[in-house]
Image 1 (tube, helix red, strand yellow):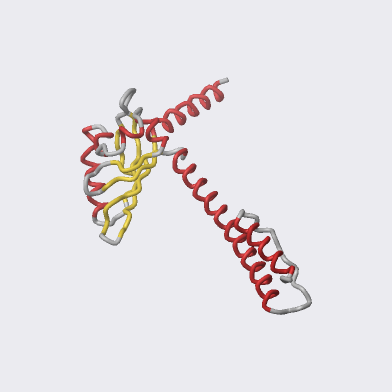
Image 2 (cartoon, helix red, strand yellow; image 1 turned 90 degrees about the horizontal axis):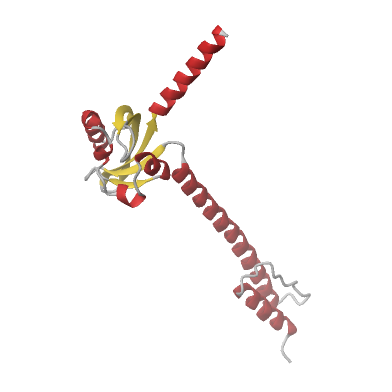
Length: 194
């Protein structure tokens, strides 16, 4: 007659295969090879359970980072420094520029700014190609529809094995900030008069 512990080991293996990582086998008093297999399966279950938790945490972190990128309060994009085109843009930038996401990807970043501020952007891109960071370059963004607006362009180069080929960029709409500051000043003036 077969050892009943083997049936429990097979049952635990079936439960593990089905994704149940909580199955455990109590070792017997025999303390032999079969018990060693049972203890080994318990250790494997514990290890898989901790890895599953780590994988779930990793997935959650990735989801949180993706959400932060897409819904950040500033425009974020990745720019190919060889072609000067947008590789990826967040929802905030897509909304500000009044384009569909697919339309913005592949479009030169300089096409998003007014002609009079394109030279400043070109100088910033050249600095990025040399591996330098760029901070608060004043540009005028030109949305597909609506009025142009003042913005600050900042970026850092992304260094890869083959050199510097991309940059991560932030664009802050300072026009909206200026309007809010003007409204605050106006409200303070009215308050002081009142």
